Structures are given as C-alpha cells and as structure tokens.
Length: 163
Image (tube, rainbow, N blue to C red):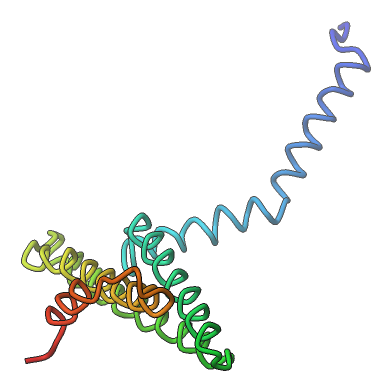
C-alpha cells in the first residue's frame, strides 16, 4: 500500500493542529466565552439593558462635573477631590436607581413579562436627565450671566419640587 501523503502535507496538518490547539488553550478565548459573555447576558437581563441611554447620562454627568469645576474656578473656590467623590457617589446612586427601574420594567410572572411598570422607565430616564440638565444650566448661568435661562431653570426646578 502506497501512502498518498508527502512530508509537506503532514507539515501543513501539524501547523493547523498547533494553531487550533493554541487557540483552544488560549485563556482570552475561554475568558470571553465562559466569563465575559455570560456576564453581559446576566447584566442585560437582570441589571440594565439600555446602553444608549447610559451613554447620554454619562455625557450629562461629565458635563455637570466639568461645568461645576469651571464655576468653582471662576468663583475662585478651591477645587478639591470632594466634588469628584460626590460625582462618583451620584453615579453609583444613579446606577442602583437604574437597576431597580430595570427590575420593575423587566420582571416576569410565570415566564411572562409584565407590562404594568412599562411607563416608569420613560419617567425615570427623563427625571435623571432633567436633574443633570438643570445642574448643567445652573453652572452655565453662573459662568456667564448673558446666558440667562433663569426662567427656564425655575420652571424645571418647580417640576422637581416636593409638595
């Protein structure tokens, strides 16, 4: 019986087998497959799923921080790490709030999603954006009086006052 394979064929096979084995053994592939992917799936199902909104909220939080620092510099106030810590605490509070809102919107009874709290997501997202937007506008007015939006800020403030 004559072999149809040459040494080069076995070399190609060996190279392919080594590449396959190295990818199979690669920690990054296993980490992504068995750690990161399930974490993302868990996060989107049980914690939070609206990444588009989160981008906008992050932009607003950063704008609030930057305009707040600029306001402090203009008023010749000392800029300390306390304000940045407050921003981090605020972001954590918002995160917990968003997880609760997501839970109210996404929970299931007997395998079926309930629709009773569907409206709460829109209200909660609008509430957070309104708080951040109001703070940014207040900082801008403090930086330059020519940008007078006090009437607008007062109306936003009235909407969020406790009765």
